Length: 131
Image (cartoon, rainbow, N blue to C red; front, side, top):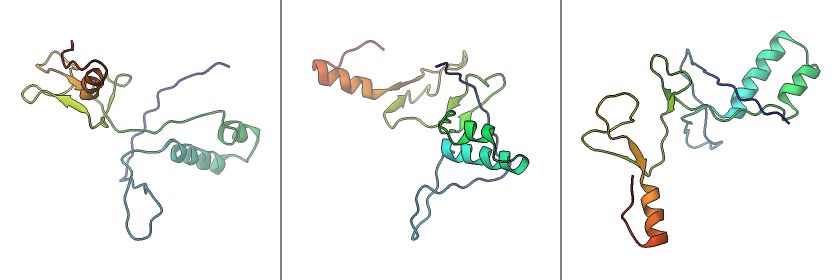
């Protein structure tokens, strides 16, 4: 089986609200677009223009195409393929004085995941490691 990957860039032109649960007493929203929601939107658009044919079922009902969640990214000029998601683990740390991603030649110490330090300590009992 050949697996192909494509980069999909979605830009919402209007505010977007996707509920995170089905609770009636409170409304919380997601910070991303679930892949199933995106797939459903594509299927709905397809059916507006076409009949429910074999092509429709190949794409949308037979699990031949999988869409992961679409996460917001920081996109600058010429970073279409290198866009970075804005969602980071809670264990991600950066320098207080020169913080942020090390994308350009600007002064930045980059970001690292402190979970690695914890795992090394748990396995070795030693906090010293090379970063």
